[in-house]
Amino acid sequence: MLIALVNAGASRRQRSGVTRRGFLKWLIAGFGAVSLAGVLYPVLRFLKPPAAVSGAIGQVVDIGALSAFPAGRLTAVAVNDQPAVVANVNGAYTVYSLICTHLGCVLAVQDDGLHCPCHGSDFSASGAVLKGPAKLPLPPYHSRVQSGSLLVGPIDLSKASYPGWYKGEFQ
Amino acid sequence: MSAVPEGQQPQAVEPGKRGFVPWLLRRLGLVDTMEDQYNRIVPRHASNYIYCFGGIALVLFIILAFTGIMLAVYYQPTPATAYQSVLDISTKVQFGWWIRSIHRWAAGGMVLLVFVHMLRVFFTGAYKAPRELNWVTGVVLFVVTLSFGFTGYLLPWDQKAYWATKVGTDIAGSVPVIGHFLLVSLRGGEQISAATLGRFYDLHVLVLPAIIILLLFGHFWMIRRQGISGRL
Image 1 (cartoon, rainbow over the protein chains, first blue to last red):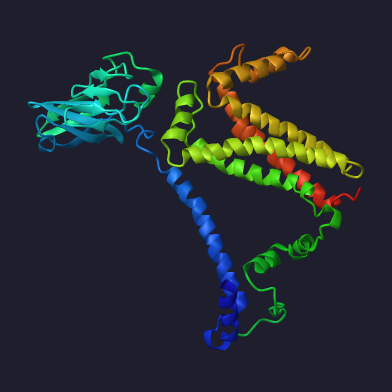
Image 2 (image 1 turned 135 degrees about the vertical axis):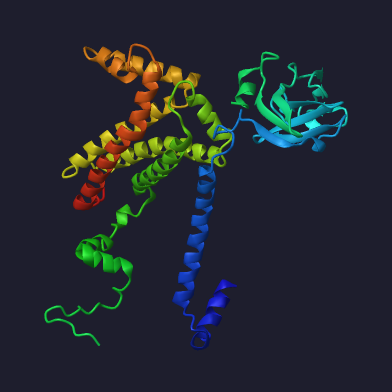
């Protein structure tokens, strides 16, 4: 098809003003530009600092108005790019990590609790283990209500002895 | 039409010598030099894949320099943060796993290709007069390449890195007379510590790159002056 295109171009050179040499030059330049973009794109993305590396973890962030977290419900949120869940038990707000304490999968939020899609662990709405293989409860975040918004600070890993790789998710 | 002063008539530019690069070469006085370089003919016996190993090693070095500069953006050479920063590069930085994997595989590949290039030079007798000095710089380049590997191995600061460095510096310590001096100089003390990590990082990103670039320049300058060796 390419050859047909080039031949057609040659026979119509006078009209179109496109020479075979010019066409091939543009073709090579085009392939070069695409290849260069293929290298530059990952490089530029690499240089953009992720929240977790730039030290944003542990800073207090506003995750939204209280009305976004209805009573008796579990609401998935992102805290500094980390998955978390807000539990509203009759106006008492608690924020838990959504990272399974077994092997680090992100838990699925269900009506009455949290379920791990990888190995089947179940957690209650308060973060306690209902069913293994996970052994450790989900750690809560420090949080407080201020002027109608829920503010979330660093994670509280003091409630149980968490393994190093799990702590690493939050450092 | 502006008048051109006497004696400064613009020289007619030959057809085919237009464009930015020829313009630049004329200004730098490199027209003849580059023409000479472009017009080198690769001998028929050297138009063979076994003559490509040195060139591939150079390409790998360029890839390593580029990806290494990128990794240094996030890597932190302190005992408390080194391991975590490497983990962050692999799991949190976008395309970090990709850049780090390329660096790691190119490093292994460069050691392999430098060695295979050395075998090619040896078995084709390319080290013989007048190319002895190029063989000597080549051997030093091989040692520098291995040193890159050895110093880079410590940087992730995991168990494998720690014990490999322990064993490697112990071997340096077994050298007669100057052994202890070598060991303490490499480790920055009797034991492997934060000082060791700092020294290895310094060697890996500052000292060895400077040495290898100087040696590569000499290596390529000599091959251009002496030409490719004759057939077997």
